[in-house]
Every structure is written in structure tokens, then in C-alpha cells.
Length: 229
Image (cartoon, one colour):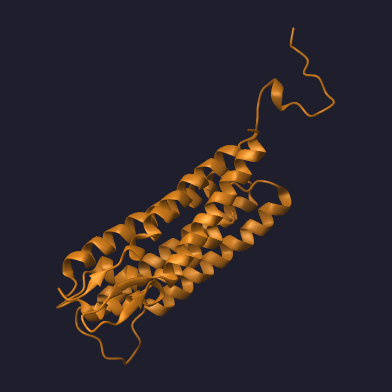
């Protein structure tokens, strides 16, 4: 396969994987003791079925599953980008992803004057800080695209979904051990993990295919490489 074919295959695979995550948001993730079914998009309701305090990692993820999935989809559309026109379009998608993460950070902040448990306000501030850092990283990738530092942005499109895969698995493993005995996780809850993993793998493929070709085979058509004497 040519570099272009590899890049397009990687891009298509990354986008399809990200769409699979979105499909997973519509599936039933869990059923409560009362028979109430919770979809991935409403994963925050899983907190109601955890006796005592919810683990901060699990709470962070289930409250923002949709935001993570949407940001991943926007970044998937930029995997392996290199051309001049595609570069600006990908930059716009990355800026949108960063804006989405900023909105999540603002949403995470404790409301002034609102009632919060003593432990909850510091948690919310920590969640907002994490989202702010993620937004800065994604925005840095957009700036890197404008400056043609493709490797930086490609690295972000690979690491972001892989990190989400680890976060998804960690959150669900924690929930599986802390949920009320009458509640149960469904197979659909785990779909996002392999989808995020595949997105990262395909992003690697797209980045590999977008690398500039070197050697005699990379000469433009109509020109014959001249061997140096």
C-alpha cells in the first residue's frame, strides 16, 4: 500500500472507531436494583447505585462520558492530516475539541453559593483542572498543525484515545466492585474501551502513512531519479 492509502485507511478506521464509541453511548450500560436501565449518555446516574462515596476516578469519567466521546470524535477526524487545506480543517476540528473540553472544565467548577459536601468541592476543582490541561494540550496540537509540526499533533491523536481507553476501563472496573449488589453492568458498557483502543491504533497507522516519503520511489511522476556520482 502507498503512504496515501495507509493514511486514508488509518483515518477511516479512527473515525469509525470514534463513531463506535458514540454508538456505545446509546447502549444500556447498567440496570439498577429497581430495574431502571442506564445508557452510556446517562452514566452519571450510576452514582445513585454506589453505596457511600463514589471513587473520584469513576465519578470523573461517568459524569463526562459524552464530552470525552465527542472530543475523541473531533480528534479522530484529524488523524494523519498533512495537506495544506486539510491542515486548516483539522486545526478547526482540534479547536472545537479544545472548546468542548473548556466547557467541560467550566461545568466542573462548583457553583458559587451552591450546597456541596465537604469532599465534593475539591474534587470538582480537580476535575476542572484536568479538563483545562487537556484543553491546553489539544489546543497546542492545533497550533502545531498551523506551524506544520505534524508529529506533535499526530502524537496527541494517538495518546488521547489510548488514555480514554485506560480511563474507561479503570472507571468501570471500580464501579463493578462498588455498585450496589442489586445493580449490574451490561456488556455494552465495555464497548467504548476497545473502540478507543482501535482509534489509537488507527491513528498510529494514519500518522505512519502521512510521513514524507524518501528515496527513489518518492520522486514525482515524470521525473527519473538521478543517481549521484
